[in-house]
Length: 151
Image (cartoon, rainbow, N blue to C red; front, side, top):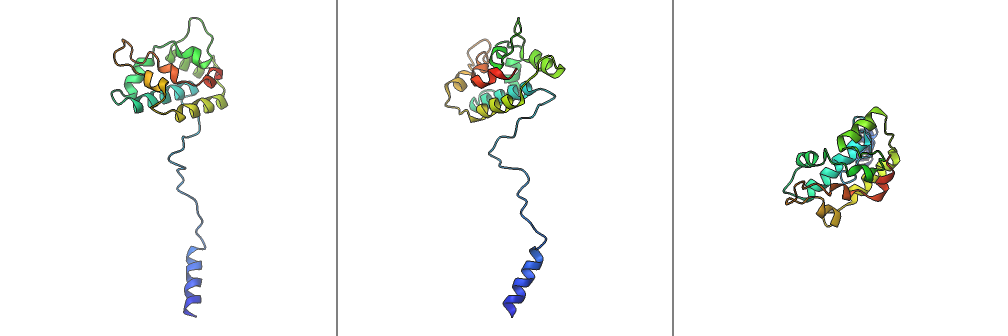
């Protein structure tokens, strides 16, 4: 009878409980793509710099942003066909204003490919070259070809 009472008590105590998880999701899985300040491009650029700075300890995300902000070679890698090619900040501004329309599912695929890169990837290794006048000149090379259909 003691065991039945104990089991009954435990059932009463836990009857209101349900497994909800941590609410934070898998900490190893990347978050879903969502436009930052109305710009998927901004999210992509941020993650390019995260990949580079995490694989090159001698640089930072902030230094990467400074290095890519005026780069025009990202336009081609994102499917922007404006002449002259816009800079990173111009792309963000054009998307935020609605002058460039991005494809959210392509952004998700592009970001997924970025998150799958490792520090051993040749394009990641070459994305930062401290001896170059602009060490981030090849940063756009980390973008997968799927990204060319973002715009």
